[in-house]
Length: 69
Image (tube, rainbow, N blue to C red; front, side, top):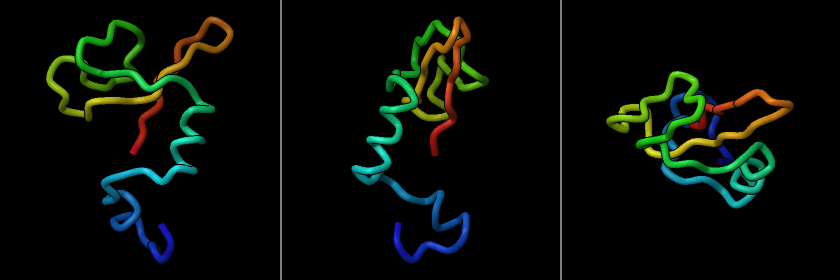
């Protein structure tokens, strides 16, 4: 958001801007982590310890899980 100048401020946002959501849509599909069976990229899919959703895609046969703040 405007005026944020350090990582603490940037990573403490509780919601995304519409522009950021559009950017995430370009990267892949929003998936629910709990019970996810594809490549998880180290994210927790059993107890939501690393969040509840992330962005996932497949590209040229490779699975990609983005870690989204």
